Image 1 (cartoon, rainbow, N blue to C red):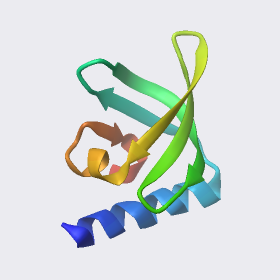
Image 2 (tube, helix red, strand yellow; image 1 turned 180 degrees about the horizontal axis):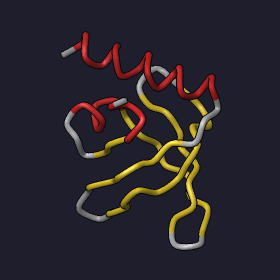
Image 3 (cartoon, rainbow, N blue to C red; image 1 turned 135 degrees about the horizontal axis):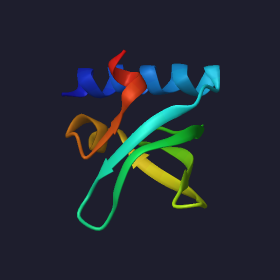
Image 4 (cartoon, one colour; image 1 turned 180 degrees about the vertical axis):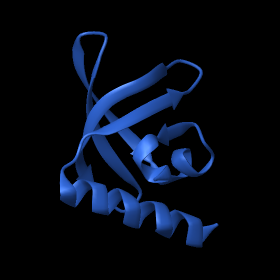
Amino acid sequence: MNVDINIIKSKILKLYKENEPIHIDVNLKRRNVKNALGIIKGVYDNFFIVKSKVNLYDEEFSISYIDILIKNISIKELNS
């Protein structure tokens, strides 16, 4: 599992450095976002920050790498 998280971290860091827009889906009980366009604003050891426009408002999400791993959150660009 640690190897999978390191792969996710390296892909997120690459997207952050390229400063390219990403498409994010959030599938949590209290939050449900589909195909929101966003940009990675910061990358840290256990999480990263995404800024996105959701329902006409700018929002920032703190996303843990575990949420990506267990598929609570998906980023389209990680699969390509």
